[in-house]
Amino acid sequence: MAAERPLTLDEIAAAHNLEDLDFLKLDTQGTEYEILSAATWALARVLMVEVEVEFVELYLGQRLAFDIQRLMHEKGFECLYLNREYVPDAIFRVSSNLGHFSK
Image 1 (cartoon, helix red, strand yellow):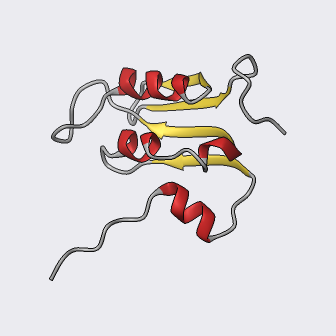
Image 2 (image 1 turned 120 degrees about the vertical axis):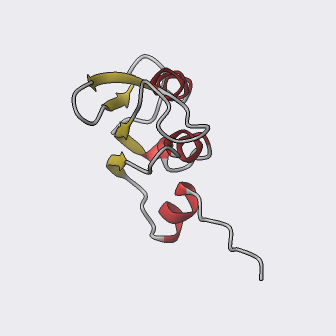
């Protein structure tokens, strides 16, 4: 029996008619980069994203904080805040100078 393919963030947002998203938080045990890299439709509708990031690899093949920061910049976001304490999180907001969606 074949395993089912997991849904993408775009598919979940579209299935639930999430047209305007204010805030998205991802903490998916090392798969944040893959989820964000496949998200186009959902990220075009969100204003801020909080992502758990790591500076050292905790999960095999995990992308690190600088990879996620570069990806988010490419998708029109800028890093607003970086928490490096117990569980590192980065908060990104839509960059006003990149012509991204804004309310």
